[in-house]
Length: 255
View (cartoon, rainbow, N blue to C red):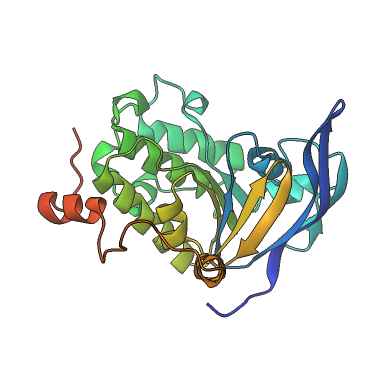
């Protein structure tokens, strides 16, 4: 894609907990309108990094700019232009989806048509259902819907497809691509490398609090191949998930 101006700039970010340094002076930029992946093993520092950008955790050192605003000076203004995926514990179990949307819209002081928002994530038929009654894929789609209530410039998705079946996972990929196509910048964490390869324009790989690689997925793959790396098994034109989807269909199987 054509390189856009950075909407997020992180410079020399450090986060310490006592003597432990979780994030060790990392720097990167996220371009407006891209899907940017932050990848790494558990404990690498990626969640800490995102929580700092999301204004949910204080940094120790460094400078962060979000849409031209310094995080130190304009945290409340930054909160207004970002959407953060909530975990299950963020939803009141006794409210249905329409009521939850109205609740969050009130917190943002926004007027939102719940039906239109639910349409955008293919959940209009669940408008009167309680969150706890949804399938795994439906819960993840609703969680993403709540990030869109304040019409954010940037949304943060934390492992959005973990535990989903192949149809629900591919459906969520389509949803993320559709959100980006409307101009929203997406930052995503995932442990599924095929997901990152399919969705992300660029990825940063973080390990032990440091960024060890930052490039397009194809760029990183080409760099590895140029070293003489070869897979032990022949690379095929499809994988087992492709077989599964082809044989069982792309339509969602939801209770």
